[in-house]
Length: 114
Image (cartoon, rainbow, N blue to C red; front, side, top):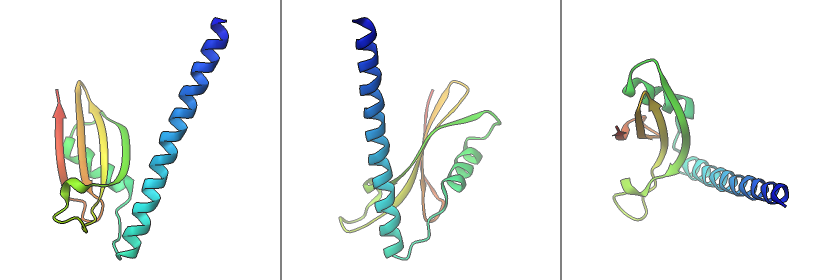
């Protein structure tokens, strides 16, 4: 009984994570299409991570997550569109939440949780 429950829970968690991954992929696809429609050239996720690492400094930066998002926090009007690389990183005991403009490479948000 315990084994069957464990197998069931692992299956549910795996499917949940796959659903999140698929949703992230769909959002990224939409953002890339919208950026292309608006003739925006996006920097790569690798370039955004390099920008974030340079800002954090130090040699022991671990990247936890990188997502391309349409960040409405930075909109001036409802018709605006602003693609942003959202990066979560860790260095030592500090956790970083960084938003990098996916067009200009400008750091829009730099938050440290100590």
